[in-house]
Length: 86
Image 1 (cartoon, rainbow, N blue to C red):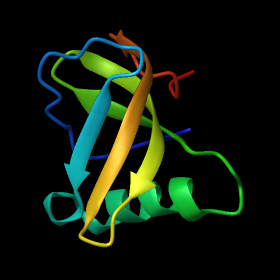
Image 2 (image 1 turned 90 degrees about the vertical axis):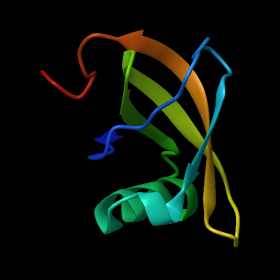
Image 3 (image 1 turned 180 degrees about the vertical axis):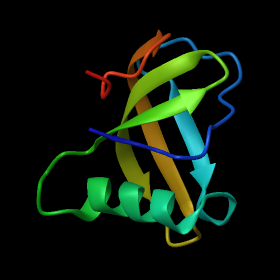
Image 4 (image 1 turned 45 degrees about the vertical axis):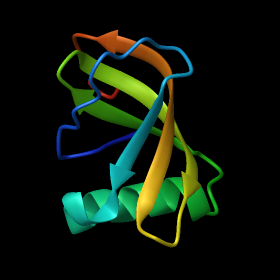
């Protein structure tokens, strides 16, 4: 599972099923590519890890709008450590 490089502010997060909207223009190019790969990619793995003010959360990239917005649905977390760290 890939981790977004830029931390995201999610406010009062109450997982699961909390929806997060992220504007493409507020992310580095690598994070935009990570989200596009998760949503459109051939691997069929829509999950990414997001660092936020509460720790780490796992989210599914649910939608991508032509206007430059990604919609992520929180599926677990927050945790104090990343799932991607062994």
